[in-house]
Length: 360
Image (cartoon, rainbow, N blue to C red; front, side, top):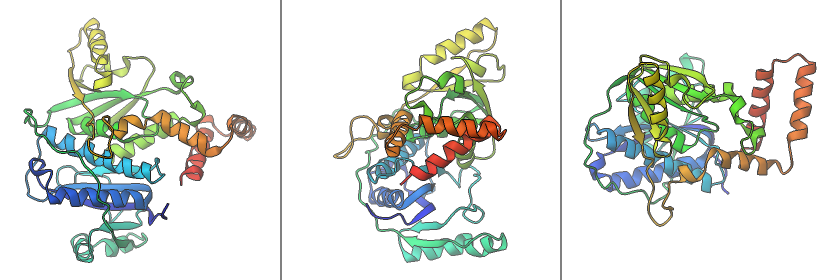
């Protein structure tokens, strides 16, 4: 396994319109995404832009988003780094909390050539602005592309514009965010204009999960959700509430207009709307996100995002320890209790330490 270039990096990605998704531009960009995913240890920001100035429709954007996140996840996994945090943004379409001039932990900007690196420096004036903000300078690293197979865009009869809702809702555990989660969250953030309500599963409902000792705390999952969503777009409200039953906050909220589900959870829409009928509230539209299954010589029929789940991440972490950590966890809890450290702080420290130590 080759060494990592950096802990945190940014790669600007440029595609032509999805209708010409199989052209050389797409091949070059996926090769750069693969190389960046292998070279980054912790966090990789991918900013998506269209070089021909055309705006994608909803189906096209979700296809490209899913393809990019899945290719990045696959390359990181094959490189022995399944915990790589890939974040995606659309700088010419939506404001983002991420900027290369102000993100404090950014170490490297990846580019395909020295000329491209020079253009980025001129365009963003990155290091001078970072110095003014008392932030460390970043390096510009030229990547050696790694050719990969990527899914062909077959077109769609769905050429609709973006869904236009003000208030949307989604729910889930969102433990150890993986590519499948992120595809859904991008859809959630982009389908509404004012507020996204997320029901986040309470810890009490997760005690019987496999490898439960490696579950992230509610506070950790909420923090990571906000960071990812604000990277996608930062101009709407993210209202994250505790989910203690299958319906959760989607039932009583009178402002909601749409619920976002995956193919696997689509039946949940009926349950939510039944609850809203009983409360004499409006029925929610159901927006189903079908995670793209990647095809090709190196892909299974099901996308890697669906094959490497949150449970797989926890299993990976358990395997990395090489032993049962429950006794150690119990000792940690007793120590924190004796020092009067609040339970949620102790849990956050515990999870943060093992994730940092056991990532490659």
